[in-house]
Length: 250
Length: 253
Image (cartoon, rainbow over all chains, first blue to last red; front, side):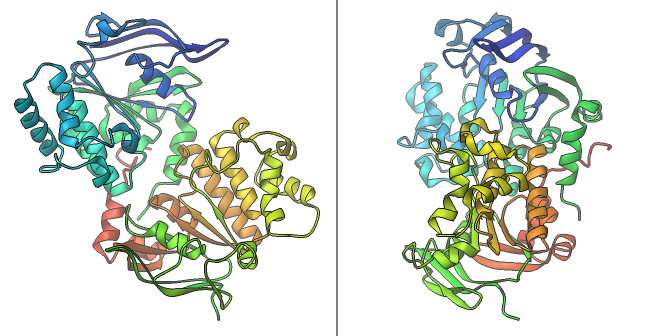
């Protein structure tokens, strides 16, 4: 459902993402790992048409057959929210602070032409699905960080997307809250549901949900394969060693 | 033996919320203690009270038996020379228009520490694994991990006895996180520095600390040596925190 070929994102004179090619199947859950500055967030931006002005994107990204590199709003309109959706890193800034969460979750449905009452009902059902039943009259400031991230996931799911892209969805959350959000992502993605592209620097988080890992380093794709295989790749040796050193042993 | 840093019965209320409820803590010289708990458990409120950045509704803080309470910069100078802090976000904790050397020397100037500040800065930069010529560069020229090294260098500048670090590595990726944790362990051992680490990262706590306090809803629900508390957690909150940590164990090493 997602085909990326020779994708690059460049500043004048410097490539942040350098000739990356990979595919994601329907319902597949793929982790994108790499250290800070490896190009993970730039890759996400290019896949979703969110690259900031001043950066040049070249190559090809096909979302369910539609070429989106260089695409304008007319191409993205039927895709955004319905085929692709993003869960951003920081739940504090991803939501509108002045709008009740039920209204925010209903907004993408309203944009798709769903009548008001139906959109509100669907939003309440989505909030219930992410474990926040009865919160639709609340403002984001009345929710905790983990609850706000659940709202962001409900918002992303509103258009029943086929690909959910989550960029460090739990790195701002503490471990118990993180575990809850990962369980939720586990429930809403996978075979027969949305595919997941999970960007994280935490290998343990990636392996918790994904069957396949892409490893980025210096803007290049340096490994792509099943989780167990990639973790034994010498390229990841330092990251795996550091993860194990900082793992909790009981 | 009098503990170096001692808090007794600290309570802090914000309107109708009791953020911290009768919390006591003793930190001995060179000891490494962690405060863990979920978001909202009172970790950062405790840190602010211990740093005299906030006034408790009840309870006291003392350093070497001398009471500590918020006040003018001048009245706290003696305290700030001995208790320093490493902030969470190295991206925001440096003035972008101040060269690194001046930033690291700032506590020396503010706290009226005598001596050759330039030489001390060079010594500190080397101690945290950076080149001495880093002093002439700007904060934006450094990566997140390097900036956190700079923050540690700045905290060490007045030769404190206690370093309080609130989530010192949570903004860093795992390889850099391990390097910074090892740097903290190393400077603590080398200078006989006591560490108080506030974190929700239990792996970091296990790697760095001897003793741990578990906070929930503003109260200490469990405390003890790290091996004991993590090996056989007595309180459900501690067990929950430990169970929630994702691991790589599922995958063969």
